[in-house]
Image 1 (cartoon, rainbow, N blue to C red):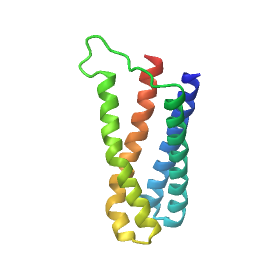
Image 2: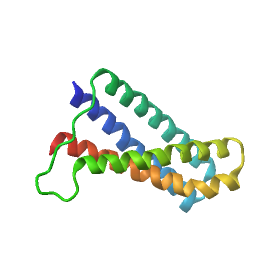
Image 3: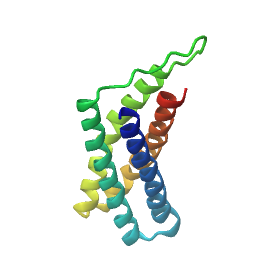
Length: 137
């Protein structure tokens, strides 16, 4: 049950990765800010669905123990800690980025959005790697 739930969460993170990447492409390359805003709202909703699902999984099933790789310089637990630290930075940046966009403060939005979006994209990829480490190594 825990592996299935984790797989669903990993699927949500993977979906979010592609939605975020498309949203960043729309803003940076296509300069289509109308579609960009819709896509990024969708990314935010998918992230919130993931977050609720992840929290329920942790509350109801518990936390999966990270494996130990004999002889490895970097351990999976270290990767998880890095992910958690970056997430603690990313989430407030995302909240601020959405806040500025919704308030129409686009200059402020544009200053932090590249950082927030880049970190969010990185965190999504990192989450998929962690799922792989937990369930396939």
